Image 1 (spheres, rainbow, N blue to C red):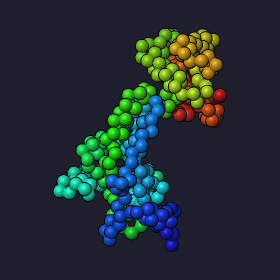
Image 2: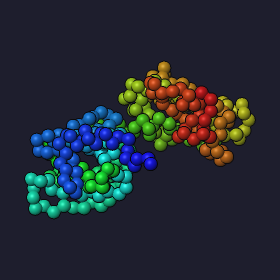
Image 3: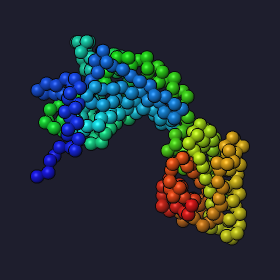
Image 4: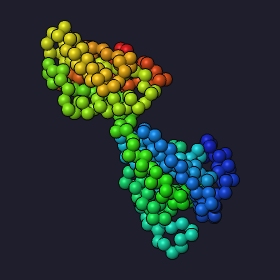
Length: 307
């Protein structure tokens, strides 16, 4: 009969050897006063507060550019059984008599990041830590049914949280996943940019100028099928050039930009308005060229064209 234990079962022995507090009813993982540390990883792309949880892994507050704060637990060993766990903000052992506050249920997955909390829940944890409390996630063990408790220590948190706030003030307005494929729509017969279009292109410029790993910016013009093919080809070229010229005027090197015009060759919809567009796609060093197709946008196969 196949074993119901995960493949990384041997890792449990190593985890338990790192000073984990265990009892008949529960196994607890958490840093004490003497070894509680928080580390800030900062850049214009991401700010992350990282806390080592001895014997378990890491607790991380993560704030990517263009997104909101999230929180996750990370562990190489799936100690908690997938399902519904509980989140409690409780007092640490050196603050007896303070009543815990239940924050409800959390989802526990079988990935190496078994607990992922959204912005609201992450901020609840932040407030608890700033108040000297200890957020704790609990869930039944994979191995023996005992309760697994993962504690997040408040010791040395507040100072690093202030540094985190300073970091977030310098984040870019968007991240790579948000900006790597963008679309500028056009009115029928038009190649004019709106204020909203310029704002989006400004974000593209800001990111490209900040990320030296971007090695190519593809600008692909398209049209609908109304009118002659020759006129549509010329209009799509005009649309691509107006976008490329804007990027260059704002500082993007001409050497990075590849401009192509496709006319009405690659429609994405039966609605003409959906096909009047210029697509902008970024390519980083090491990305496979075949993933950067001429008319791609958002990963939809209907947008795929030749390179």
